Image 1 (cartoon, rainbow, N blue to C red):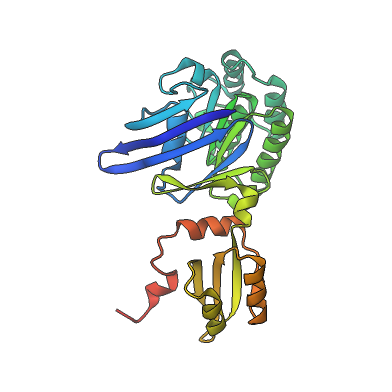
Image 2 (image 1 turned 45 degrees about the vertical axis):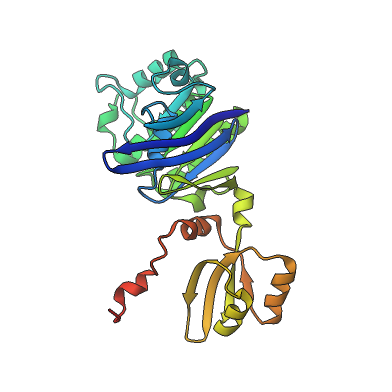
Length: 300
């Protein structure tokens, strides 16, 4: 079943095209990673899905309805980010009580257990929390809501490494207990690869890739060897990344070859290495204007 359906979706702010002709279908009961560089349009897309913004052009349906200003979409969607706002008059324990009143699938036991595990003060105000503790509380709220569409936009901002690991483990355990559609945007793809079923890679406001995490991992391969041998093996084929290691040695990331082509490379003395999904995403979204070393080049 499709939960999110976008067709030629556009959202712009004055001259800035944040979402630019994006089309995608996202199925229910999957954890999908929303990946892209800063300014790629990830947050704008997620806020369109959550019903925060109205698109300038195109079609967007969530649960079969337009999400903007839609009470049904609001009741079944929770959007979690580091700007999540709660009334300053409410203490943390009171915010959790209000969550129980608003969300029909609210898991009070989960909320209390996570709240106690992370040693939060029930009489503290949300606005007085540190950045990391705000993110932790927001994560608790988002998980406990048990919404059919749960959106986490950079949810680990400010968290230290151990808390991030706890968050990912809690998310997976709760998802297995209560499957629903989860969109997870993060710069830490390497940390959450094992969580994801699908990856939606956004570049310049549109879809760059949308495939399973397993397909993404198998999309490309690293090749190292003598420069002349690599150039012969590539024979003009497109690569995702190239780096000259020495005058005679080169490393490239190429699209996955078939077995015959790979055997040809081994015959030429080339070395093949796996490439992480995180690195593949970086290579797919880079501007292709050279590497950082070019900044220090003596050439004009």
